[in-house]
Amino acid sequence: MAGEVLFILIGGVVIGLLGKFVAPGDRDRIPLWLTVVCGVLGIFLGTYLYVDVLGGRAGTPGVDWLRHLVQVLVAAVLVMVAAAVTGRRRKPR
Image (cartoon, rainbow, N blue to C red):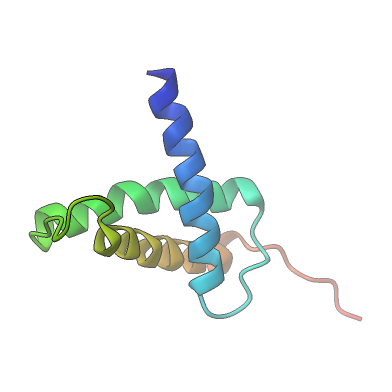
């Protein structure tokens, strides 16, 4: 159980940072913890979309790269929404 939670958190960091990198616009306005939350949600929602909605299956043995691509894209959308809603404002000069 603890290993699964740790794996999800590490995956959330990786997917969240990749989503932050892929997302257009000013993404650096959200804190790291919110990026991790977007990554974890991206893992769950991306897997749901890929498997249940799109009917995706692993085309090759090993790593399912298409599923991870969908997860990163979902995390990128979540990062953009989080940046728009709760982003830090910069001080005017």
